[in-house]
Image (cartoon, rainbow, N blue to C red):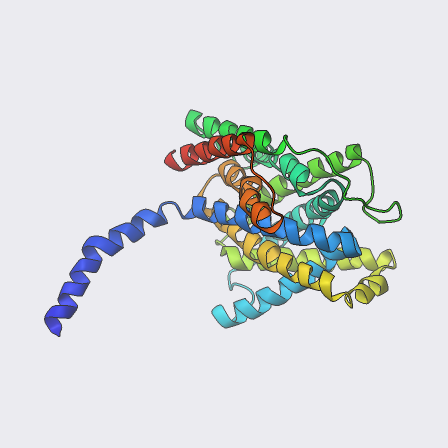
Length: 329
């Protein structure tokens, strides 16, 4: 038995451990790509929920669900909700990141999802890497090399090539729907969403790594959610919409979509995005995050029976090539 145990340890040391170390070198890139996949599911769930009850109410409800999920996971996994090294400065920057990214950015993004559809909204979200790179350059002093810039350009070019084939659809919303509007208004909201995502990502990285002791990504994500929850429900109280929001919770179909979106978005997606920026530059993380439209292709093919054209396949290959360059860099 001792010899078997010794042989097992030797095999682990020679084969498994080096592979584990090698994989850990790409933990930031893997987390960013996982974020993109999560947001693909989220966009489908929240666009359907928004059609039923309106995007603002979806944003309010999904934050409640997300905070509830975080409380359970953190208490089971770590035994506490907040890290011991947490300071008011951490809370300020994480809270500001949450308000910009989750309240303003996601609020605009959810409205755009319902107004102009997931595909066109995703195209506008692909501008987030450029915005994140510029913000991180000014705010964090991060720089990118030539290979990084080529990878970012290829990824964004591939995403744009894929989505630009899709025509604009207004999703047949009635004029009385809170998210009905014009193409111009939807595009403007999408741009606001992209900026909110980029700025929120950079501010969250600053809060986790540059303010006193380091804050783990999961706790940082929970604090962002909690501050955003307080902020958006306070706004709703001033607007007199809390009663309406509680009333729409009786819509089981909308609540099912919202819960699915909350799991893949505010919980898994935001947690993975913060894990990504902990290990790689914010511009690269945002670029890999923006591959969501590529992940949407097989999902819409399976769920909505859409056909994939040569242009879509070509754009996918270009985007994946850009991702590969970023990982090699």
